[in-house]
Structures are given as structure tokens and as C-alpha cells.
Amino acid sequence: MANKMIKKKKYSVGHICGCWGALIFLTNIMNLNANEIVYNIK
Image: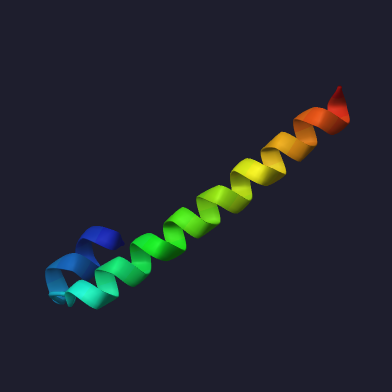
């Protein structure tokens, strides 16, 4: 799906930065959740 969207539209720099910010934010949350799960298992 991502490839189709990229082909359809040329995103502005701000939009790309916003997407990367969201991805980084989500990955940080996932990392925190994973760490909490690991500690709970231990």
C-alpha cells in the first residue's frame, strides 16, 4: 500500500517529517511496552 501511495502523491517535506515523527513515537512506545513485558515475565 505504501508504494502505491508514494506513486500517487508527492508528499511535502513537512508531511514526510510528520510521518517519521509518528513512526519514531510509535516505535518508542512499542519498545517501552516490550521492555515492560520482558520485566513482567522475569
